Image (tube, rainbow, N blue to C red; front, side, top):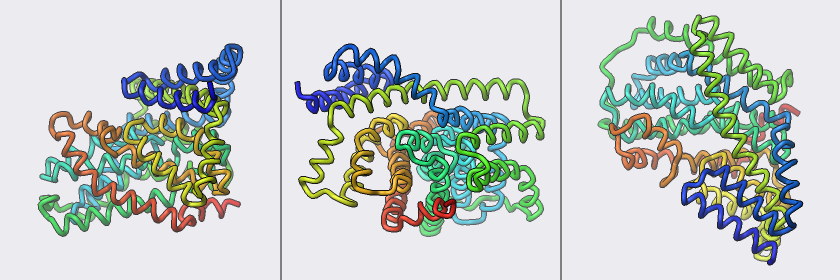
Length: 435
């Protein structure tokens, strides 16, 4: 059987198995090994299973993943996260939609400590959504802002997805993380402007809060916020200055979060044990899926599909930004159905050869990929961030209401994508200074 046909059947089988709710790691591993066996035989399939998982897991740069997970777990379990929202609420409550804007920026702050979109949505959903609903905020706005802003965990460094992308694309992980700073701030800023404008036009979306914090209370709230900027600046500053690599930055962040929690006398044995448990579980899931994705990469390469796609693009005149548009379209479609790590690791083996042959900067494309993944997290019918918020609020808010609240944020995301494509310097300015 033709290898390209086998590859195409394999990709189709993956979609079918995922639709049947077979776990993504098992799907990737089983289909990849079957495909390798069909193309080059039994010995190659067994050899791939023997060597590829070890070689991938032993990759030094991936040790940053459990470290970033531990950093975020300690920050959350020690209660450092709640202080961000409290301060943002006191300072921004007077603006139209002030609590929603506060939630937006609090999500951005926690995103810089967690490295995970789902963790950010889950943590801030438990803190911010009940507060907004208590003050009579529109249910779609209250849940939509946390579901959308929670996705900034993928973009604002440190980011687990950036570590995975950099490993697969053989791009500088440090530069990728620094490249995400301005797009992340830009996204949060556009969200805030949109919320304020909507709430100014339609005040019923966000009734004015009935408390007037004093300036003393506002400045008092900043006393408990300093650990988070200290943690973020420690990690990003270390990366930008070159003092630490991306891998070492994960260890630095985990160390700083433990020191901060201990300094606040919140580092109990229960907090430490739960943080380690969360880290082990998250690392196991990510690595299991990643091993399947590496095997898929070998299968796809052997099938010749990437080269066929490049030839197809050249034959039909799909060049330059047309390739980026095609990749973005596929990412957005698959993002409706796949989790972010699975989406990233399934698509990269197919698209990276096309992007490299087109001569695009892999750092710039990496930021676009993360943005596409972000959009997939809030796109129906299977927006993982939306379902995370649904799990937090339970029956209080219908799922349809959350998706309706997301639509305005989707429009903002598409605007940011256009800006990133038209003005590549948004992503490449800070990495350029590192040179």
